[in-house]
Image (cartoon, helix red, strand yellow):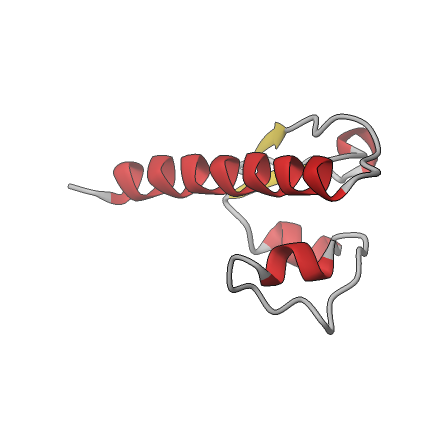
Length: 87
């Protein structure tokens, strides 16, 4: 998916999937999990959202669709966080 995200200006050349750490969860107000939400430590005061992303993609068009869906979900979360922080 790296060349796919490069099409929208995201440099992911040095990125790889990994598990979120407990320290990252402790520092978060909101955790959005794409998979494995049941395996995360659940802390009081941290909101959790599980976003199912669908099955494995094979074609470039399917990968672009997944990328665009993920970008839309990130924009939605960012808009909600921004509204929540506004006076």
